[in-house]
Length: 455
Image (cartoon, rainbow, N blue to C red; front, side, top):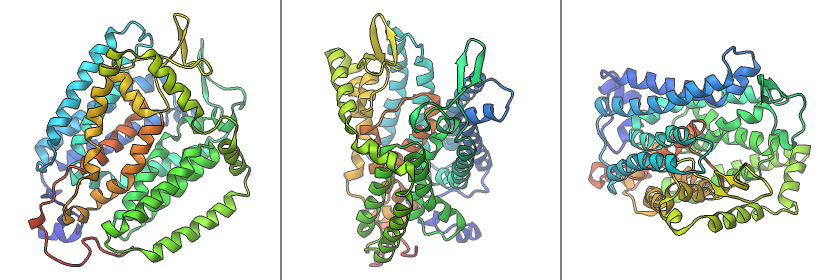
């Protein structure tokens, strides 16, 4: 155990006991985590598999892998419970996660009762929703974070290669004969390409950046993690012209610098100057491209940035009654949305299942009761934490990226389909860290920063 501890200095700074990796069952846990990410990668990149001639139909891939992801998540919870020491948690954490598990079953039943749930997506959303409480339990464990560090980086950059290879490949279109390749690229912003269909994995870029900045390791993996934010911006902002990607990157960097006096107990002048200098070079180069000009037109367009979102929110509240606002309409619930972009038509009305204000998606499914339960996992962010809590790189990484995650939940749409497995995993991993326990008397008394100041 002594030799292992010397080889893993981060682990011995964790706020609770870390199990020896040689312990029976840990290998199974690591294998399941890798299997989860492999299956998730296949699920997200199934359009690329189809493009490169993988013989299994797209619908079969989605169905099989969509069922496998929640099952593996629940299996991981069981294996972790019998393999790893149970970490002490604060703020009645276990009780709140249990409520979320129970809520998933209740919302499944409520969704099945709704007449207008014609898409019959209740079981699909249940498969996605159940992964959130599962990963809220898994995220408490340092060993889980340690085990997925390298696989997450590998998954991210493999997806980047696939996006670059399929950037001009027409996305598969469902016809009566099955899925066939689109005949031409007509949609703006490359939205009808295979690359766009598989770009969801880029969403882990901000977490990788925050985790890399929080880490004191000095290896190539940390460099790749920090660089992930730049890759995320180039793909989402320049290739697909998502306005929020560029803003998210700036916001995340500002959060890191704002938190540096708390996290590292000093102001990192050198890294601030270096990052802003690098960002300036990237900005100058990007400003000469057509993609940058197109992105700026989206910011300056006549529709405004939030006009469509406000329109969606207004129609949402017009359609939802008092009971609906209290308890929601269950998983895969719908509402009568704006007519300018109908999701589908049912009984002569335009029916939507998502909203650009993500928190309204929570209200749609579980009412304000689900919304308050979800907010309870975010409240510990502003509560005081002992100094030792910041000595854990996983806590710090989550602390840096969570403001961006919470902003995205507020202002961006999401659903609970199995395709959203990365969102459920990242939310669970990060929100779990807010309730981890770091007793003051378990740390040496020192006036030095609890985190190594090396970059």
